[in-house]
Length: 196
Image (cartoon, rainbow, N blue to C red):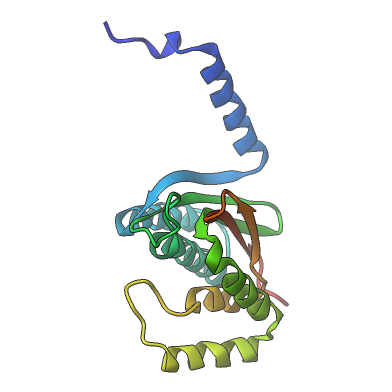
């Protein structure tokens, strides 16, 4: 006999109730944990496009939010490492979350990264966060010319473009898991209004 949803343990129902309220309190519009591949990316961006179309946000802002979401999902899809070996994994696994407040939309992701890659990634993000828009544009053009793009992506072009599109730096944090890997959390924010 199939168990009714009403017979599910109270601990689980308490968890669902608390999660629902936490999402409502923090204006979380979308949260996902699991495999991120091209199909998942397309599904989420289609949902986001539909939700953004229903808002009164400026069209340029909608495009920026959409663009940052795609870049964040692509980053997990192409650059998440295997949690047991630290080797590149395909498809990637991670966490994806979209929330908002009165000032901005917040797109956050988390995935496993090999400890051997942390210094390089951290230094790159720190550097692009310091650059002004003309310098970012020049770096983007240079990387496009000098780098042969592969299936794994293009030499930080996604990060550069996220900072270019939002006008704000990327927040990045690394939480050690073991000697081989860490969990990297990346947060990008898109202002709800164009600068005046």
